[in-house]
Image (cartoon, rainbow, N blue to C red):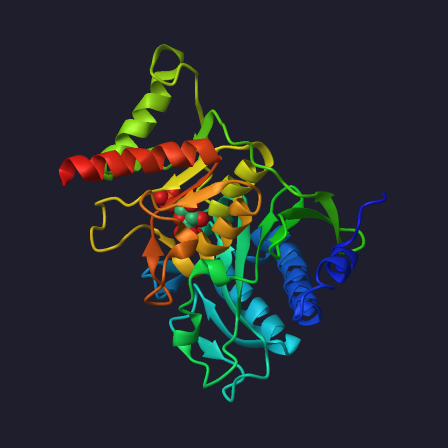
Length: 337
Ligand code: FDP
């Protein structure tokens, strides 16, 4: 096998960045922790770690034992890396600041330690998602420091725990996928400079929410379902794994569009997915792979966050489809206006 290891990729790719050495250290810390988690996931059905706990997280969702375990693994790894000033996690209500004096460590990390947790109990695919932001150079670091638009991200990555464990990363120069060789615990580059085709005939959406969707989404999906005989003049396929990592990974590998749109199921929330540690890192990975990412009304990476667990509508993937859905939103808003 002649594939480049993650370590040697980072050595070259980070060389030109002023913060490159520290970034490589951080990514390798996340990678090492994810390997530990992959091993725990593989035996979780035997150890009882797939159990649901009686406590809820900040999102009001019941935690699984593995949510807590995975969070602890990454928090420990980031703290020990000595390059992370603070973290925000889906599983923790408040930001955790490691270096209150600030300004010594260059990065903030917002992460979802175990995405798609409903899949845990059924041996389905899950993942971990990370957004790496610059820590402020001056002043104390607190939760406010994490309220940066996604376009400020220095890097984004996820790890997918499937038949193979893979790490997909962008440090701002394309999106690269690495596959774990479990025998040596080394990630090797298997898909360089991923390119999401602009057109697709595949979409991923939780269709059971249709009655809660806005008109532009109802229109788009209806036209896809009409297939060859309809306006789109081709048949579409649908996939939904209930894990954003798994659904977005599929799109990075073979094109498609992923939608978790704004709906009126919970009208007080702007969407289901979290901006800081789900929508932003996935949007960076998709845009760096020549795809597009939008709420339907604006580019996700341009959103100025107002709170750390903020939710957002997410539509991302093949460029032409995301643009068409945005166009439907624009027409709808104009007509309403
Ligand atoms: P989960 O809450 O199970 O961790 O992170 C939110 C998320 O999963 C996404 O990974 C996934 O796409 C979505 O929620 C699943 O939503 P549905 O329950 O509506 O299918």
